[in-house]
Amino acid sequence: MPADTLSPPAVHPHDGRPPPRWAVRAAHLIPLVALPSGLWRIALVAGLPIGAVVAGVPIRPGFGESVYIVALSLVSEGLALLALGLVRPWGEVFPRRLPWLGNRRVPPPFAVTAATAGAVALTVIWGYAMWGALVHGNDLGLPTGGFALLVGCYAPLVLWGPLLLAVTWSYHHRRSGG
Image (cartoon, rainbow, N blue to C red; front, side):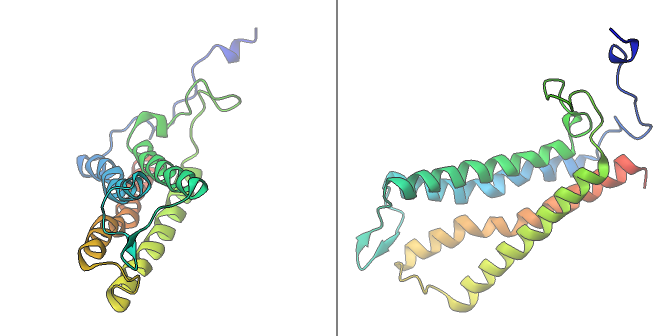
């Protein structure tokens, strides 16, 4: 076996520096701001009385829609949890179990570009959605309580993009020495 496969990965001078406390808190907050909307969707699938009615009849998604809604909730929460990689060691070195990448340094430009693109997209998507809810109000025809619950569960998503952008900036600053 070649000697270079047994040696530990080359350590970059900026790797291993701890993130600031505010960035760790912000990264942990991201999955929490995504959680209420996911719980609202799960409640919809479960048939709980969340005020999602049309013409007085509760909305009951079909099987395919239910699978999609649950999958959307799980994927959203999974993506939100990825923000923790910006403040944890697994965001600096790929886990050993990954084929071809394991135990190699995560290229900071890759992580920063992906996280920045995600942050910008989330800011635009949820900013536009909240603007629409404020301008158009309850054009879904939901009862007032149901609409308030819907908005209350989705409003925290407006924070996801800016929080991710701040944590990404911290990651970039820490990993590039800037």
